[in-house]
Amino acid sequence: MNKIKTMAIVALVALSTVSYAQKKVINSNQLPANAQTFIKNNFASNQITSTIEEKENLLSKEYQVILNNGTKIEFDKSGNWEEVDGHNNAIPLKFVPKSIQNYVTKSFPNTHIVKIKKSSRKFEVEISNGLELEFNKKGQFTKIDD
Amino acid sequence: MKKSLKNYTIRYITIMILIVIAVWATLFYAYITEEVYDNVDDGLKNQKIEIIRAAYQDESILKTDTFGINQFKITKSDVQVNKDEKNIFKNDLIYMPYDEDMEPYRILNTYFYGKDKQLYQLEIRTSTVEEDELKYDLATALIILYILIIVSIFLLNTLVFHRAFKPFYQILDKLERYQFGKIKTAVPITSNVSEFILLDTEIDKMLDRNEKIFQQQKLFIENASHELQTPLAISSNKLELLLEDEQLAEHHLITISETKEALERMIKLNKALLMLSRIENNQFDATQTVDFNSVIHEACEELADLIEFRGITLEVLEHGKFSTDFNVDLVKILISNLLRNAINYNKSKNGFIKIDIHKDFFTIANSGKNTALQAENIFDRFHKENTAINSNGLGLSIVKTIIETNKTISINYSYLNNFHIFKIQKL
Image 1 (tube, rainbow over the protein chains, first blue to last red):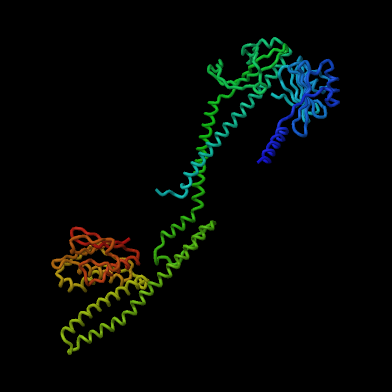
Image 2 (spheres, each protein chain N blue to C red):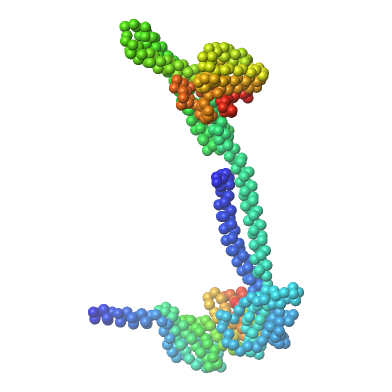
């Protein structure tokens, strides 16, 4: 009876550690090197308010950085940026592909990019008027996601 | 109620097609309206992009707060916008001055941020298809389609059916016309359809088998009757001899006499059967033009004594000469049988026989039983009236067989004014 109890507890603990994503607050200099470089290059004037390391499962890891102006940046486990969300405020454009910038300026003058998301296949860009645009991985416009 | 084969499946076809069209119509309608709305919605969403773009270039657009010529409306908003519920489409009825009626419209309700970072609600509308009218048009078109399909199937069915089943009806006709002993060989039908050819072949084989058996039977009867003649004659002679024997007692003689009478009946019956089978086997084929009037007179003369003995009055009226192509022997037998019947079934005294001869028919009428005979049965073999003990029941059968083999005349029985009338008529 005791043996079974111990085994059950061990199983439960093991399961719980695996089942949810584990979030851990880390220090900003614990970020991968190129993540830190990215922040230094684009957000030099801002300060980092918090850095979170998120373990999705045993294999993948994500980093979330929140700046003092509310901008949220997400990095993958190698420190490459995945998402930059300005929460309705304009984001710096240095890292945004030129073709995307050109399209936004031409099609929607007087607007700015407030959020950009990058995946292996596409870019998802949200602009200040509320519209969402989609570009392929080369930065060419594909469609308006409405 | 039995229906023709060609109409048998029509009922199921009409129901089936009705179901198919109903189901198809529903799906088609849903598909069409989805396409229409898809298209309309795409147009509305495109307009939204244009309007937002324009609003960023010309801020006065933000002041469009009524659906004017621009069919869109912008109002300030402060709701929390959920990204997933940003675009909301709905249908509405709005008064259209041109049609002077409420018309269906599709309206897109959405949000965007202006250059001034203010949230605005944007409503864009466009007139769309009148669903009711579309339903009505579709229903009408489909009813017409349904009727056309059913009618063409019916016509096609009828046309094809008649062509396809022609050999079948030929076979039916052949069977209908078939009578025992009347056809020599079966004639096959022509057809491309293997099933009908098979059916026809088997039927022909069956008919041939029947004919063969029938012929064998006829021959058998004739042979049997023929063979019977000899032993019957011998028996009769032997009994005759016995009757002449003076050494026999009277009661013995009575018994022998009764036996001989019975034997005589058997001989007569056998003769009649033989006659019948010979007639049927067409052994009385030879024909010539026969004058029935003279045959009738002859017969009356031959039976004159019997007629007088029975106390019957005979009347013969000649209104014309009845003559036709016939076998003369058969005519004699015919008339003789009819006349004998008229005598035997007459009243026991003061009976009457009337013979009426015309060019196309003649009648033999006799008084007798007070009720009519059964016309369907009297010509049957071995049918006897209850009162006749000595009759073998074949007299009228022979008459009938003679007439049927010849095919140029007919016989018919009727009862009128207490007279039993047999009428022979030229066909």
